[in-house]
Length: 93
Image 1 (cartoon, one colour):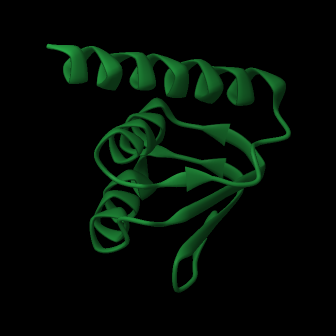
Image 2 (cartoon, one colour):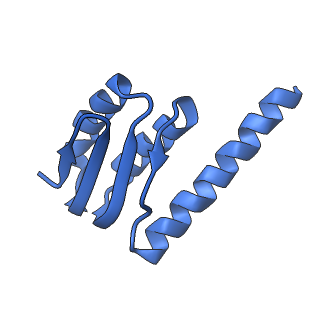
Image 3 (cartoon, one colour):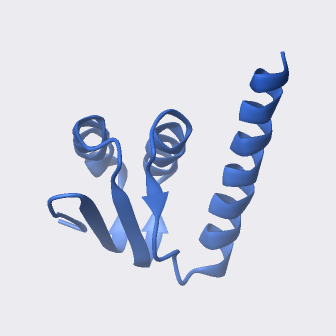
């Protein structure tokens, strides 16, 4: 399995496909302060990306360390910035 689940962290390696999305989602619901190690993730299916982004929006999930893949790191960085902007907008409403 390309995700190794530890007590409060998940370590992603290689290609993380759609089949792992439901397992990751269930685990993140139980671990709202989880840490995701994406350093060695070579491919992340968009379903997995959606699960991660949703978890970051609704819980204290952090990505540490970030992925080595420059494109994936940039996508996660931009999504995190957008989510912060959205939260700030809600605070001002």
